[in-house]
Image 1 (tube, one colour):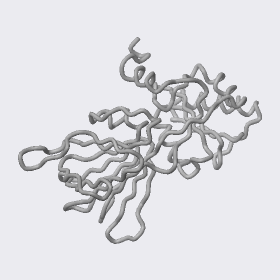
Image 2 (spheres, one colour):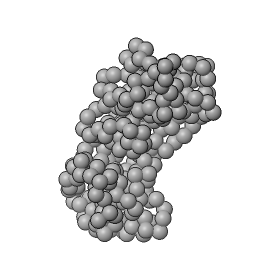
Image 3 (cartoon, one colour):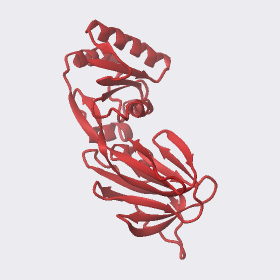
Image 4 (cartoon, helix red, strand yellow):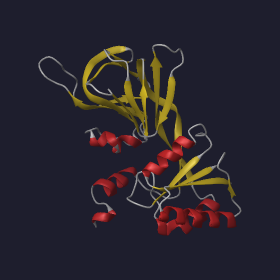
Length: 268
């Protein structure tokens, strides 16, 4: 089996990476950064996002597993003291693969035929670089509303506990193939109106954002942030691809939610 380890690069994460690599070599596993079968992410959810984007073109063959060296994360559920147990389970292939839905973001330009296409594991956001964002929101090619406000966030189910939650969005179980559109400080008065609530869209639905005035936007895809110019539309859908995680033991999603937001280890 081929493996690669991505570290957050702090002292503890690097120490664990060296230890895990030494153990895996002893078990005859091959270090392969180009085409790994399994990727160990040592750090936090941010480290996992970097690992995901590094291998976003190999999702059908790569499985991820996370070791957290800070706060408990939704993608990193192994503790540093469990590194030997994890390595032994990897060497014995004592794991199953679970899959989570992803978000596909397509940015279409006025002056280009080909769109820019991105995959997100958590979310994609759209903001105007210097003024209020004004966007027509279309659902399945039908006009739904004209949004005015700070921005819009489209999240995956697994990403619903991240920025989406901070915006007041719902937490969605990752077994549901869906995406969620959440508003950022929408303008609602007697003149301008939006629905004012998050929208949960099933996998067969499409959402398009079309600029009303300015064509330039700040678009994020997970931790990536880029200024896109001359945008004709931004289109979202549940991606065909899925991210694969190596699961070695039960860790129910709602237990993760409970431990992270209600009764974390740090609070005990």
